[in-house]
Image (tube, rainbow, N blue to C red; front, side, top):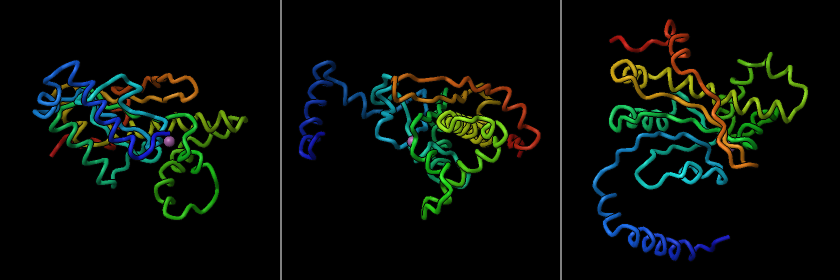
Amino acid sequence: MASYEDLFRNNQKWIEQKTSQDAGFFEQLSRDQRPDYLYIGCSDSRVAAEELMGLGPGEVFVHRNVANLVTSIDLNVMSVINYAVRVLKVKHIIVCGHYNCGGVKAAMTPADMGILNPWLRNIRDVYRLHKIELNAIADEHERYNRLIELNVQEQCINIIKTAAVQLSHLQDGYPKVHGWVFDIRSGKIIDLKIDFEKILNDIRDIYDLTKS
Ligand code: CO
């Protein structure tokens, strides 16, 4: 593990590495940001957002929280989505969950988690929505993995419920919303192949926010 002092030495090395490759790197970086991607992932230290996608500074707008949740009353994630869509005009929004997610595990545990209760409630609600499918899975670990996937899918739907995404999609044809699971044991990104157009059509009768 790196010591606290190491972090500054690492930073200096990183600056030297970047400027040796491109002397104007930071000058360029300070001008503007025009990322094509918004990434919403878990805070888990093992799921290194930019690194796992091979992206560098300026290429992805990032939001992370416990268990990669998108809830309509969370001013933080809603501000991120609105800014990314309306101002940065990102082309893709990615929700990236991961196997071995402690947040999802906690939500499968019937116990009082204190301050985490209202946050984990969102995942318990995903379980309730998909209770028949989940309870039919006998193996607990398989059920846990499936809840992780379904949680990503539901968060994608929550993004599609926002006015910013609906309006931008209507006007410009983007952003597209994608659901991924990061497999910590192999390092692989698994694309859940969320059918964005179908979900948008399916929920339109209830969640359409494109009219003023
Ligand atoms: Co997690």
